[in-house]
Image (tube, rainbow, N blue to C red; front, side, top):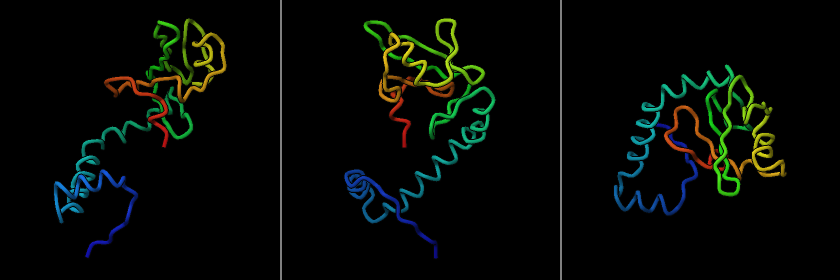
Length: 133
């Protein structure tokens, strides 16, 4: 007999899953998670590289080459993470908060809300707050 663990799942998501898979929904969940782990195994192996010029922002690991952007007035401004520092307009900043403030006219800003992140493995930018757990 397999051991099971119960994890939180949004009610509406569970209802949609049950509607589609009926009584087989627990197996469907197992299958999807196993598939996800298989597909992302290489991503996990590369996760160690964030230490080489990357940055750990709370629980979010940003590898070297990550881009941060914010919209300030009608312009997208972009900073790049290299050598553990955020580079923007010829200057280096030690944290996402510092570079965010610089990009937004040296005004105190909540970087989690104002920044978007695009790591080297990402296709598009995503709002920074989406990376928070």
